Length: 162
Image 1 (cartoon, helix red, strand yellow):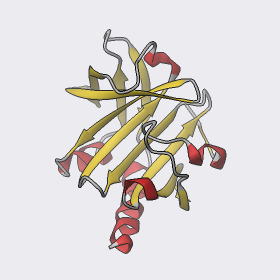
Image 2 (cartoon, rainbow, N blue to C red):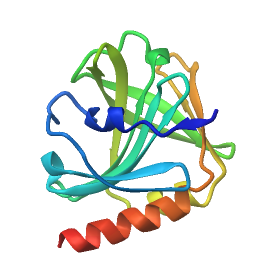
Image 3 (cartoon, helix red, strand yellow):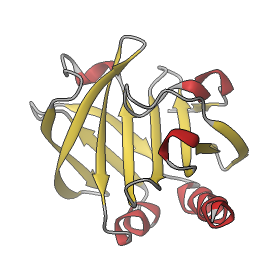
C-alpha cells in the first residue's frame, strides 16, 4: 500500500488522552518524524496509507516505554480504554500482545506498549508486519521498508529532547 504524505494527520493521537498536536520533525523513507509533547516530548515515526490507516512507532518519555499504534477501520468495535489480546507477525514470526483500544475521529485504533527496546530493532530488521484483531482477522499488513532509517532519525530526535 503506498503511503501518503499527509501532514493533516499530524494531530491524530495514539489514545484519546493524548490531545496535543504532534510537532513535525521531518520526513524520511515514507515516514514522518514527529514529537509528541503529551508524551514528554517522545519522538515517533508515523505513516498514512491510501485507505487512511495510520501507523505509529514511538517513545512514551513519561513512562519510559515504546509503543506501536495502528488506526484502521478493520479493528471493528474496539472500545476506548478496554484491553484486547491481539496478534502480529514480523515476516511470519508470530507474537501475542495486549493492545489498548480507542477511537479517534470515529476510526478505531489499538496501541501496544512495550518496555523491551530490542523490540524496535526487531521491527526495523523485518520487511513486513501483519496485525490481527482479537477475532484473528488481519487488520493490515505494514510494509516496513524504510523503517530502520526512519527509526534512526527518531532516536536522534529523542536524544535531542534530553
